[in-house]
Image (cartoon, rainbow, N blue to C red; front, side, top):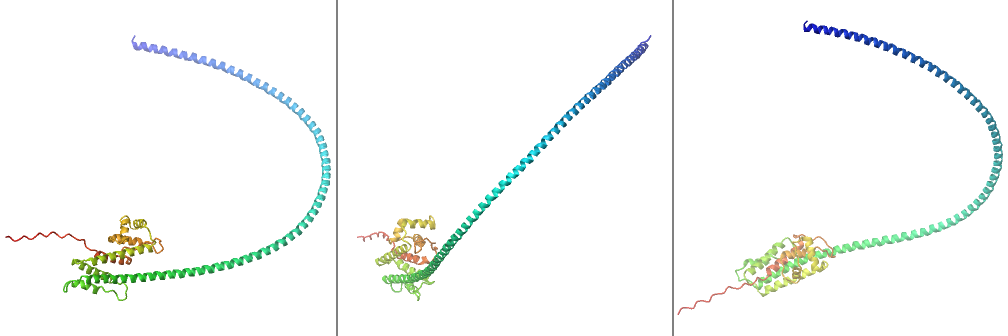
Length: 392
């Protein structure tokens, strides 16, 4: 027998065994299902019986509870009927007590009304007295008010006349102030006119000084034609007031002085003129300082720095030299004059004049004149060698 056949026989045997085992399992399952079904039916029957018994017990208990509830309700109804009688008795008693209270209240209201009427009568009488007293007081107040009004009217009239007098005084004061302002304006105009006259006189005086210098040491005939031309060309205007020709006249006059000095003919007379002009300029500076409130030199120094900056140095030594007829440079002189002119006639601060202002013309002219009159510094003449003696 081959191996395949042997395997086929074993497979058939196994198949038959499996079918038999399956049939046995199915029979066993069928038996188990039948048994379980019988038990379930039995349990269901028992449960139905128990439910029926429970329902009957519940109905019995419910009937007993309903009977007890009916008995309790009857008892409550009987008690309520008894209470209703008590309540009606209480109502009757309350009605009687209310009637008695109303009666006593009526008596009390009548008494109160009577008392109120009596108090009203007393109040009316008191009110009458108060009204009469008020009328009397009102009459007194009216009389006092009339007197007060008359007094106020008198005071108002007095104040009116006082205000009128004050207004008239203010008017008169305003008129006086206006006249004072006009007078001040006139005085300032006169000062300006005198200043113009002083300028004209200063120009004439400068011309006279220059002519005197010319005549003091006149050059020989035929020389210095340019020198003698200056006085003729420097004649002052016929009306005595400075004109547009003043700078040209001044330049020609200075040219004449310069020509005189260039010839080396300065003398003691020229030095005297120079000192006189220095003193004259110092006197004018002192007068200007007094006219502008006479500030101290330290105040002038601080004011110059405030106006013109750190470049405007006016130490006390420089101011002292200018006020004491010592020669100072043009910048120092102009700073000093402009600083003094930065105060008005009342000593109050005001803007200084510009460096090209006409107010500074006479000061520049005088400084130029002083500078031209300033004697030159003497120089030592070089030593002259002795001539050789002739040989023997």
